[in-house]
Image (cartoon, rainbow, N blue to C red; front, side, top):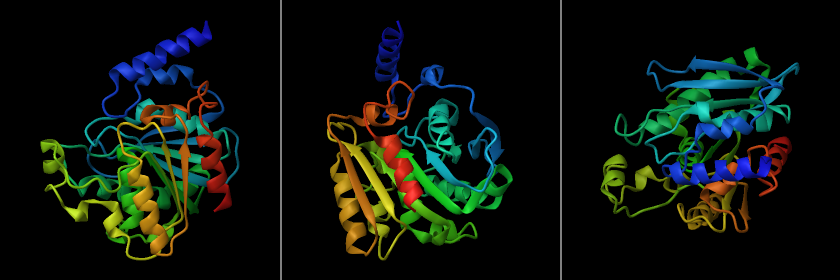
Length: 282
């Protein structure tokens, strides 16, 4: 019976996904115990500038802090759908924040990265209140969210504009991210990123020196974001003297990779453990 329910949920996700945002039905598979959720914390004045913080139940700090941004083509998504991310890493002794951010057409590039930096600045200021260690902040994301995470770590000006420093970021985990996808042909993306070939809008073109250590993960069967994005970003980071590790999960697609953080699907890839190992090693 459980396997049938799981299969139906997977089919539902595949049928209703909009570029990469898992639906709230997946939350049905996520345990509600083992952590405490602090919801609707504002890191800015806009209704979309909010985040939820998950804290291991009964844990004593200071603990590493993971900030996560979901995907959705910068046009959709809700932090409420990502309880699985909170549970996946609170169960490993971490404080986890899942952040919303402003979407197109409300904002274009640079708005996404500005919000990523704003959420990071909020966590640096408030992590200790939730048992987190502000000196061990990690940033992660899937798809469009991976772009946000990697961009804020590639261009120091975003976090500096929030009164911070790139040194705040201990490490970055990008999951199936688009980091270098020029030139653009889709009219929506041309508007969103202000031109067909705006190099300023690509994280890869902001790497001009050492950056925080990065783990870049993707699936070999990703038909949404070409894995060449991961290869080119890794090559640029290495050429600039940065530490970077690339993991490609064989037979895994754009949705399967993020679903592998959900209880019941974790055997599909080793992503959760790979992320935990990366965080613990840094």
